[in-house]
Length: 112
Length: 116
Image 1 (cartoon, each protein chain N blue to C red):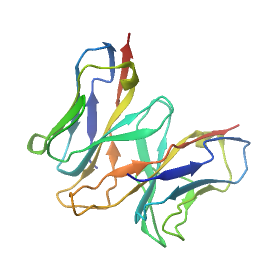
Image 2: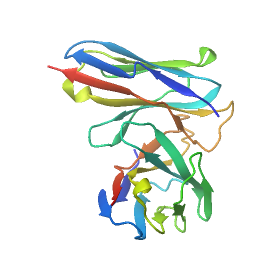
Image 3: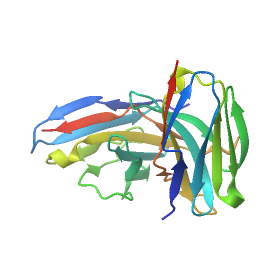
Image 4: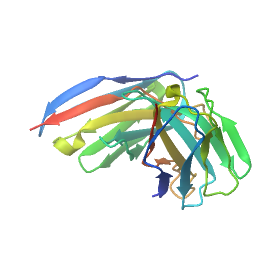
């Protein structure tokens, strides 16, 4: 099956700093989502981005499908950004059942 | 945005007990999923359903079973709980939106299961 690798595994930032999280995948994808898992375990949708670029407030994401990677940018980080960021993909050229394979995540801690 | 509900949120139970984790969604999504997540680890798909009376096993082998008798309801059952079943279980649903060509998956809050 498709392999998903995320880097860095851990990241500590000072409030206000910017960061870039990376997701590499081993095969073509027809679905890619970024999630934020808060300290209570809830997964929150950030972006649906199998290709292209999207922005939502301080967050933006870019997926370069031909090179098999996606980037999540966090600007002006806040303590509420702390948690685990997951990239999840569905492999294949055409749509399937939306069965996602998750990466191992990036644990982010934002300090005052 | 989908509304996905899971109960209970936390469950501590003894070995050998039968348990059912409930999952419901109110958006009429055809596709539903169960994932298992150990602390600090990634999520693994254990079951999925493409509609009523459709259930399939996911990539991670699980001793649990699921049923899909109604579109909105996708319960997970463990016939005899064991300490190895201790984990977080997350339910999700999805639908393809033709208008904006999106296929997002939405998650419930999860159930943290501890088997003693």
